[in-house]
Length: 68
Image (cartoon, rainbow, N blue to C red; front, side):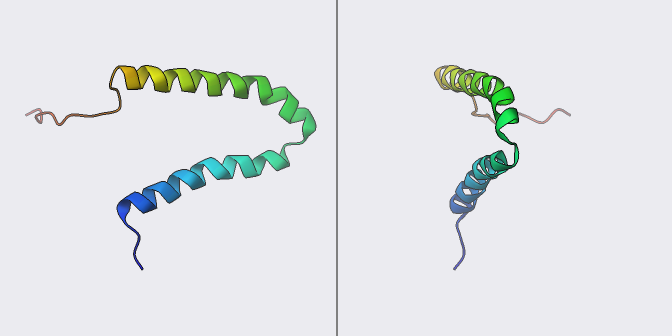
């Protein structure tokens, strides 16, 4: 059974999210504490960035004429 393009894209996105979480077990308690503040900052920044992009209708590319 073949997967549609949307299903393959969704599976790829899930894998991209899950793999870093699996490596979290390899870091150790000391490093988790060390990098948790930076991680929280990045998450908050990206949420704000996403909301701003949605407001400005970002992420949609319109086709343009080729430069000749």
